[in-house]
Amino acid sequence: MLGVHVNSVIRLEQEGLPVAQPGAGGKASLYDPAAIVAWWLARHRARGGSGDGLDPAAERARRDKAQANLAEQMHATRAGELIPRSELERILSPVVTAIRAKLLAGPRAWAPVLANIAASHGVAGIERELATRIRDVLTALSGLTGAPRRRKGKTA
Image (cartoon, rainbow, N blue to C red; front, side, top):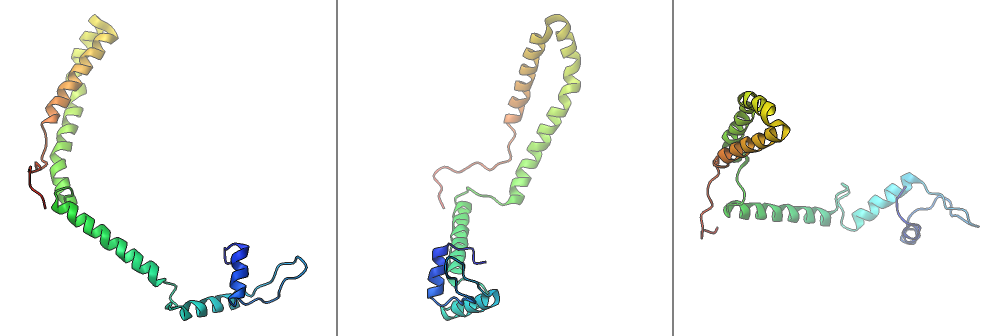
């Protein structure tokens, strides 16, 4: 029920864990779950707990971690390392649209040329032509960017 090691149960018994029927002769002790819960809550309250199941130290640690994460995000934003999602979407939307258009235009534009190359140069010719056309598309797309340029020498 407690999900702890046997030695922890022995220690808890020494600290007052209620035992319904003590074990003897190699038999395990029997416990009343309701009595254990009542004892556990009373013990928790006596140690400064609120009884709501929250551990004040753990809650402080969680809060401190969240505050540290927020401070790191604010620093990264001021340093130009983070941008808002809406700005990223605004920047990437035309790039993604251009990539999509180039990729979708390829098969229709390339098919007749590839058919002729297949007849005259076979698979190797098709491979060379596709590699050339794909490089051309990637080169054309490499100039697309809406991202702001990082300013040299500027720090937050």
